[in-house]
Length: 86
Image (cartoon, rainbow, N blue to C red; front, side, top):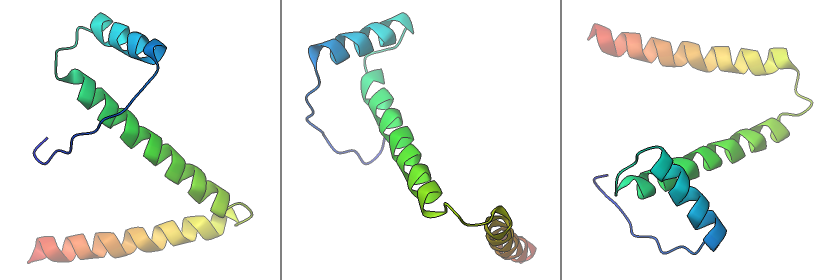
């Protein structure tokens, strides 16, 4: 991690013990706790964003969602191919 920020967080003793035991069983090293926490936070944020998008799109026909995805993919591919051709 090149640009880091220090966090101070409190967790229950049970959570601390469970996590440290898990990491020890995996053969992790000293700096692996922050990496594990960062990965867990990233996954949780992704999970929440996906849940919010799903909730927002409830009732939207699948073909309309697929059409929007296809449109954006076509735009991105066109931009990348144009950039690669330069």
